[in-house]
Amino acid sequence: MKKVSLLICTLFMALTGAKSHAQEFYIRGGVGYVTESGKTEFNNADPNGLTMIQQSTDITINPDGSARIKSLSGTLGGGFKANITAGYMFNPYVGAEVGFNYFSGYDKTIGKFTSPQLQSEEIAYLRGLDIVPAIYLTPAFSKLNPYARIGLIIPAAGKLHIETTANQTDGGGAGTDIHINAESEVESKFSVGFVGAVGVTYPIGPKLQVFGELEFKNLSIKSKSAEITKYETTAVTDGNAVLVPGQQLADLPVNEKKFIFSDTFTQGPPDPNSPRRIPTQYVNASGVGINVGIRYSFGK
Image 1 (cartoon, helix red, strand yellow):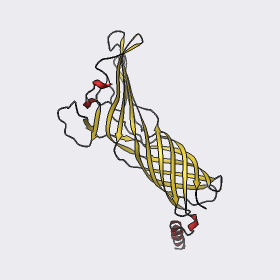
Image 2 (spheres, helix red, strand yellow):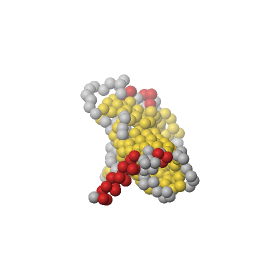
Image 3 (cartoon, one colour):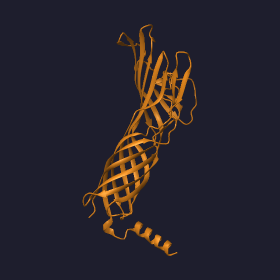
Image 4 (cartoon, one colour):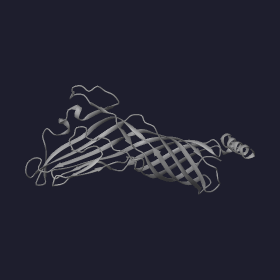
């Protein structure tokens, strides 16, 4: 019973903060690296069916007609980030903060098709700014001080980028290859994920600390719309490339270059002058990573 009472008193002191001078503002800045976690299949990145790529597959057709099929999975949450965070400690043990992360994801192959006549590949990556409100908890040790933080991660700006290449050997006749180069951008709807971290700080000055932490994020981003922003078809003969008339971005009707993701919709006759509705997709941006940086306190 005495141990329970002591624990309750300790928690009460941590939450109320007996010493007002322990209240302080702080800022934290750093950089980090994230690797994938919680792998899932990738989205269909070729709604027009131009590449022969099937969703989340790497298919190789051998000269004898046999096929090697490999399933692709992963997330687009791996990459590099930079962070700046502003926080306030209510007492030596409990604080609240809001962070801003710029995330630059690394390229990820989400689909591939290889045959003697056609070689095509889809590569995707994320670029964006996230807002991270969180609670900060620490035992307030004087030197090597562990801490934990848990909160939300909210994508505020940025896009999913998809780059597609396809090369059709002798597609324009003997000795003339057809090369397609396309780029797409996917806009997101409001999405919320969860983030947590455990780390340590160490003082290197009266108000300055260095920190290192292990961070976990669980984030699935709901897609809102997509647009093909580049579509270029060239005929290559003896190393000389010529644009193919009628097969450029300006030649695509609206319903083949603009798309809207919907949970439910009615499929009617295609309207070439309106964006095409396709089923809702989610982008898996989960990951596990490390962050390092410095923390500056404004307290006395």
